[in-house]
Structure formats: C-alpha cells, structure tokens
Length: 421
Image (spheres, helix red, strand yellow):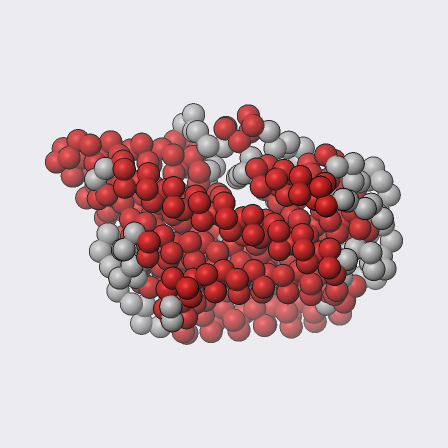
C-alpha cells in the first residue's frame, strides 16, 4: 500500500465527535430528568422508544465498522506478508509484538491489583449487595484451552469473516501471505488486487466516519438517559479510581514510548486522538480499528508492521480491559468482605492473563472472564450485578486505553524494525 494522503480536515472531524460526546451527555440527562422513572422496574414508554432509536443509530455505525474490518485485515495483512518476502521477517516482527503484548498485559494487571488494594473501593461501597446466587444474565462460556484453540484456528475463513473473528482471520492471512511470498511472480496479480482492495476499504472507512458523531451522540445519550448522572455519583469513587488507573497506565505506556520515540510520541497522540475519542464514545475499541490503521500509517508506522501488529493487538493487547479485570474481581471480593491473600491475587493475575485470550470474539468478553475467575476463587458471581449498571461508563475508558496501547505497540515495533518513517 502506498502512503495515504493527509486528511485535509482531521481536526474538524475530531471536533465533531467531541461536540457529539458533550451533546449526548446533555440530551441524555435532560431525557432522564423529564422522562425518567424513579422505579427501576418501570420505564416511561416514550423514553424506551427514544432509547431504542438511539440504540439503532449506534448499532448501525458498529455494523458498518464490522463490515469493513474483515476485508481490511485480510487485505492489509496479506499484502504486508507478501512484501516482507520471507517467514523469518514475519516471525521476528511477531515475536517482538507478542513480547511487548505480554509485558504490557502483566504491567496492566499488576497496576490494577496495586491500585485496588491501595484504594479499597469495594470496602466503602454504600450500596446494597446482590443476593448470593442471583443471575447475572451473562452467557455461560467457560474460558478453556479448547475454546482458546477454537478461537485461533478457523475451520472456515468465510465463517471467520462473517463473525469477525480477527485472530482467525490473522492466522489464515498469514498462511495466505507467506504462500504468496513463496511463489513470487505468480502471486503478483493477487497481491496487486488485494492492495487495491485495502485502499478501497480505507476509502469506505472515510465515508463511514462521517456518521461517527451521530453514533457517539446516540451511544452516550442512551446510557445517560437510562442511568442518569446520578449513577456516576453513587459509584463515583470506584469510577474515579478506575479512570485514575487508566490515566496512570496510559502515562506509563506513553513514557515507554517517549524513551524509544522521543518527542514523536506527541505527534502519535495527535494522530490517534480521533480513534481514541471514537472508541471512548462508542465504548468499542473495534469501532476505531479502520481509522486507527489509517492514522498510524499517516504517523509513519510501516504498513507491513501495522498490518500484522494491530490485528494481533486486538486479540492479545487489550491493556485497559486487562486492568479492569483485576479491578473488578478484587472490588467484588472487597464488597463481600472476602480477603484475598497476596498469593491468591498473584494466581488470579496468571489466570486472567491466559483466560482472557480464550473468549476472544465473545460479546462482553471481559465480564465473562471476570465471572469465571470469581467462581474459581469462590467469590459470588452475583457481585457482577454491582458493575452491570456502570459497565458502559467503564467500557468507554478501557476501550480508549486499548486503542492507545495498540498504537504504542505498532509504533514501537516499527521503530525496532527500523521502519518508522
């Protein structure tokens, strides 16, 4: 792929998303105050209809993004592999990326554990605890070795693309790309076609992004209309401490980036602010993927490196989600007055490090991993009900952090490969 031309109005698009975010909060709170009900079981039918419209608007955007991801990952990865020319280069980049992912994940888990032990948000929670044994309503998916392997190796590339299983698409693309590189000239027409497809999908991304402010507005307005600003006050301490943790995590990752990239890390931040804001507004790091790929290449990251590191990062390097898992498990344990020893907490970190990879592609994967971990340590799973009401608010922060973490990873691996323009 050739270098993408600069977006003539990047600041304007970011401004529109930011305005949509603020308007969503204002409109959502206005709806909650005028149409909201003091009862949690009864909801104003007019408010329900408005929320349903908001949900449709957000869902439309997310579906359009999902439409782009599979062909974009496949085409960029295959073209990148073919241009690398040999399996040794692929292996070297992959190993560097996975070593970074592993290190960042462990740091995220440890930071979350440290902060939740220092702040103890669960101990001072002044909210009635759910009865032990209450249903959480989450799908029963246990993180097992079988599930992990099933989510890595596709039985059908068509099925993998239809369900947006990024890791499976990556595995097939790697085989396909290495095969293209090994047969040389015979594969050139296919590689050229896929290169063209990648450019077309990025152009489609540009069209879809015009709709992003509407999606951000409706996503935020829907959450605030249902929960109200009041829910943020009830859980204010927990939310504040979690977001402080995310800021510290991003600062630490940014400092590592500064060590290797110098002042260019500030340029990286300018390039990725729109994808981060988009992930924050929609509470979905997936929604930012196409735009993030585009912006990283504009920043100067090597297209071949981005094509490999970014899809892998979306499966293995979700730093914000990793920190949330330790925060949530220990928060619930504290809320029920369960004292976990340091040894138990370290075992929990290892469990989370590996089981979090076993439910890739499962909706609300973080909550499912947390539920499995709670049961493993005899902590009531019903404690998850404490977090379901504010999960969207927490998901906004962790999604933006996931995007930031993957951006740093792509930039660093490009730097280490001496391929940063």
